[in-house]
Image (cartoon, rainbow, N blue to C red; front, side, top):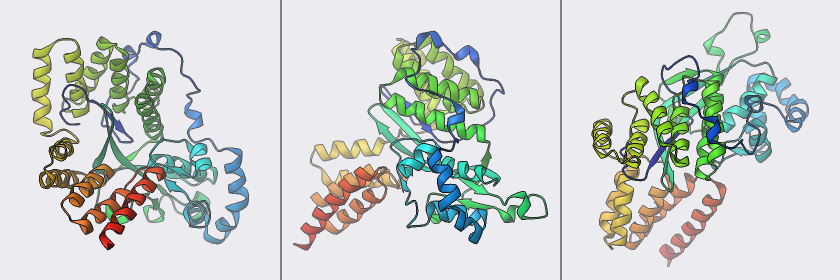
Length: 383
């Protein structure tokens, strides 16, 4: 992540790391510092089918499976309009049963739910990290970088006579094809997918101030996939927010031993060193971080908000435009550019950006709010 001086702590959602130790680094754990989790944390729950899912598979899904085959029948049963009507919702990372009950989830939740059905039907599953630029969001002084995961379904062994054949793969993605076309992918293990899920839950617990839960989610993510270093970074943030600075430093240094230019860990280590009063060491880390990434996330956005407060609408619009160039899918950037453009009297352009804010909103509630604002903008434009 970028240089986040003073307040920011960096987390990463649903991504993939590079080579790290094969065994969980137990020396980084400090269970006695945290109360037990408020609810069950168990890897077996991630892909577990609920009774409602089993019923759906045996009754609603069965005709499509017979007519379309297991691969296409599964996709049609889950995502064809008029059946489940699943919605994208990034407010919470859900396991398979939760996503099915809510009929909603982020890309990782929907991958997990789909994979759970596929495994129930005996379809081999391949998980892939799509190597696209991360999408940024923030909650207070927590910054989140969200990457993208998709999956492919192979035919059941009984459905073809030869061995594995890539031409028989059916890829399921929850982004528009034009957004992922041409991007490289990296195969990841199911253990890594479980670690991603748990790391997301840890980050979401941090955002809600549930530090004990955050620790145990991150701890279990490390158990599932020790090579997924982002969970170690999340563990460090849990320590930092809990006031355990030596433990936070030790976890971040572990990440940097394996990934010396990991911007997430550098940014968080800078914060830890400042909190310890070690200004010279913090300055050295800040210099390293500046070499890795020149601008922090939301840098131009914050400049735009400051320009708005100062009444400089044109400069604000220009700053928001620069942020959109870095991340075209962040709803806040489009919303505030719409505000600036409306103030400049450019109602049509303002309406276009408000429509994009609605399209990229992470939750249905936020989408409805943007829709209401868009209607008001269009009403002004007509008048």
